[in-house]
Length: 308
Ligand SMILES: NC(=O)c1ccc[n+]([C@@H]2O[C@H](COP(=O)([O-])OP(=O)(O)OC[C@H]3O[C@@H](n4cnc5c(N)ncnc54)[C@H](OP(=O)(O)O)[C@@H]3O)[C@@H](O)[C@H]2O)c1
Image 1: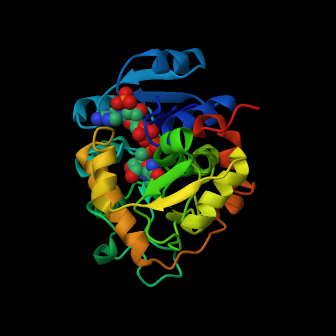
Image 2: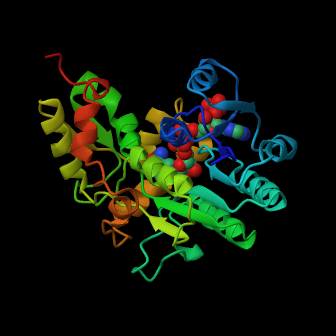
């Protein structure tokens, strides 16, 4: 493949660092990567050392996005959980269409599964952010640039971010997740990246335009039990109110992310979704999805496991 693949979010960030993972997977295969980074820093230096071409830019600035598309046929689009998704996606879709791209892998959010009647229905968006993703998917479709949408529920990495501090300090998970029986569909960011990298590296074009990735559908109590097993000590789950949770995280989360997650927790507590695991990760990548237990085991130290 002679055309570089354009990877946005390539430095990685506070969520799943999917762009960083996709860039790494493609570079390992010797595929040229044009890494679109928001800032030149140690992360972009590391990518350069790994062989990526670095281009500094802002997804909200059309000129930098247009410049990044030169000689590109395929791209990965991801945008952080903050304001501006619709603008960034529209700028990206416009530039991609003008540059004649054949494939954009769009990192979207869960919208049900194809066998679920509410699939992609705008009225069923769990939050304003989720609605923005549903609209973004359509913008990419309308641009007719061969976009495919990876629609995923919360990442395992998100669960880690939510529980690490209180588990390390108090052996307790404090979350507004109700009585413990709510189902929380989950997927690992590593698998999101593997699916994206597989589709981008395949010389053919994807057979689907929507890939719904659900690796596990545990209840809250099952998540806590899996964590206990992985880190080897007893963990309590203490349900808290939405207000208590918002108060505890407001210094760490931007208002957009806080609004999104608060609505998502309400959605899960209501049991509004009909969540089932999907076979997409295995069929696309040829590997079984990472399990939550494997994720917790691999990340035990950063989730406050006791020293051995
Ligand atoms: N986390 C979850 O549980 C979850 C689940 C399902 C779907 N998603 C979706 O996944 C997406 C987040 O993906 P991710 O995990 O790859 O994100 P991430 O780890 O937060 O990385 C975001 C990257 O985007 C860069 N960036 C920020 N603002 C930018 C701008 N204006 N222009 C160019 N680059 C910019 C950041 O660079 P700097 O750090 O240098 O600013 C960072 O490298 C969101 O759309 C979210 O809805 C997340």
